[in-house]
Amino acid sequence: MIIIAVPVEGDNGEKRVALSPETARKFVALGCKVRIQAGAGAGAHFSDADYKQAGATSAKNTAATLKGATIILTVRRPKVPALKGAAKGAILACILDPFSGKAELSALASAGLTLFSMELMPRITRAQSMDVLSSQANLAGYKAVVDAAAHFGRALPMMMTAAGTVPAARVFIMGVGVAGLQAIATAKRLGAIVTATDVRPSTKEQVESLAAKFIAVEDEEFATAETSAGYAKEMSAAYKKKQAKLIAGHVKSQDIIITTALIPGRPAPELISRRMVESMKSGSIIVDLAAERGGNCAVTKRDAVIEHKGVSVMGNTNLAGDLAGNASSLYARNLYAFIEPMIDQENKGGLAIDWEDEVITGTLVAKGGKLVHPMLTGKGGGKK
Image (tube, rainbow, N blue to C red; front, top):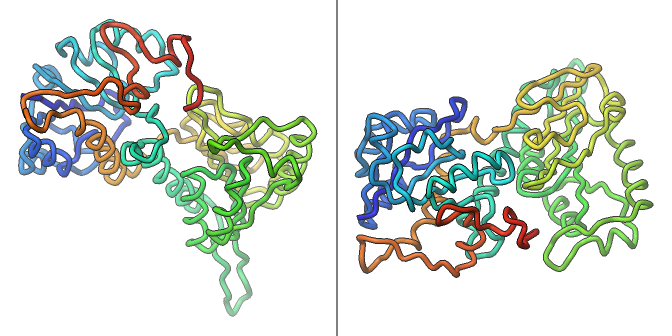
């Protein structure tokens, strides 16, 4: 019988959990035994009783949780000591952060675990329900605007009062991916005047469909700045100079800026220089969603809110985790969608993994005691 184990997250600040009562019930229906460590869902407000009602069993500690486990599900990459007692060949699926902490990653591989990194999910239609980056970024984009609004010393919508008019706040979104689009939609719902920018021409239509204004130097080079696969092309130095001048001028008038440019495995590109920060009005806000990779803003401090020349810069690296209930439910569904095809439906006692499936090859990081993903072994890879 397949045993699915979910230990308590090792990071004390992580409130999310990799299993929801909903997905526990689904795994049980597939013939799996589901075991979760007591209190693992508390941060997401899932009680042990909720899991028991869904058919899962509770274990008192991590060792008891992992004993005999076929599949281990976590949110963040656990440290090797936390997985002591896990059987060799057991599957670990999580947000593995494969491009940092190479020694820890290699140690997990050497322990004999089969590692799957959910961030490396191929961007194909079939895998959309497994895409943890999208599900968590959606919530992060929303929370970025809510946090900025809470920290901002003024109102976001325009208000007409007997004492005069309160002008609408100006919000600028830099990067129109999943997080950026949700940030645009949220800021619009709160009544702000919203503008956005991105290096991909196709995003202009998305921005305008949300009733926001697109900001970019729209010349002939910009019109062809995207590959057929939807990735941005490298722009010329001349174009970069024109775009930087436009953005620098726009930033001065903004009340709130949210930056979202984050590329897995690479330092975050600097979008806002120190000089640009200092050009903003006192009381303005910057929320940097790329803080975990150094930040899009030159003065960002990881997991801190700082004030620089009157401008607040917010560098929270786990905004989705602040919405732990929603984030856990979505993440757990991503994991279920990924794991369910591995389970032999005809023989409920085992796994049936297609090792040639591009979803498997795209996310498999380690197997048989060694790292195997081409992006980590230097044997090829690149953007999927």
